[in-house]
Picture: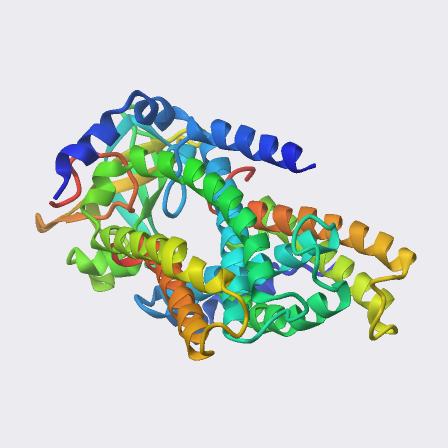
Length: 137
Length: 166
Length: 158
């Protein structure tokens, strides 16, 4: 019985050894690091929330259609640390978000950088995202 | 069948749940306490289960082992449940719509029922149920079921944030 | 500090290989949590005993020896599921003060567990004045709780 348990643990361990994981949840489980996006549009709503914030944004496709985006941000404690405030958001304001698109949901994105209309730029990424230099050193 | 959605929407909009959802300190504190108390609780449950299935602590008298661990298990179960409820209240609709969260609740309920059934069976005999073969067989079964059900509870919980299966 | 090591980890073929994975690595996280739970359970039961609480039917040494086997297997599982988590995000963690804190606490906890705690846990009852196992149990709990907490807080303040 002990041998069996050891073998199961070992197998699980070996299996896991070829997989990554993250402090909170896996970036790569939901988002595609090979699909960076730059979204220039209107913020319809911002949920300033734990464990993640969500920016709801409408962008215009080349054919004129409106696309709805749901962009994940870091927690309030992290956003504040990088200088952002809940009051920086108003429904209907324009903004630019750089991030990565969802793997299975094309309307989902993981936000990395936010640029407000007044030109101020903020890092909004969660811990454990891709090492793309967006995070301030 | 009454829909729970309006109730959850109301809950989400309350002042204190909103404050908690937006807090830089409160929410991290509650989430961290939730994880820490669950690890302590489930860790002790796993130790007891290993005794029940006779894989570890084999020289410890069964009844006494369980009785002495029980208060510590309860002491960590209470904060883990309380923090869990608070976490749910912060974002009820998102969890309600998450299949993995619902699976977690099912496994949790089954694990609780398994524990209750075992407690009721051994409750009448204060001491010496170590020697009763019927109890020992029940103990093995309850221990194995407990190991499985709490493992499934923990695994499904850890997978909740992934937003799969919308 | 140690940036070249973190860079080396980040650049490993294995780290690169699993940045693509969808299902398997959240499952690693889940198994890691399970392994951590078993590991912490074995620590806590031993620490409770050292504080004079918990199961008393066996000797402290007997509990410790049983727990030790569990610690070894669970510890192995924790390591095997934890290391890939680290190497994939090595450069992100490198910038996190909480991650660094967690690593220092982990090193301290491991060192303490395999040296002082082990000797005290397997010592015969009555050979040591009772404040010694009490203190060791308390320090052990504090260190391991510290590791858990600092790990969880990385997402929020790291």
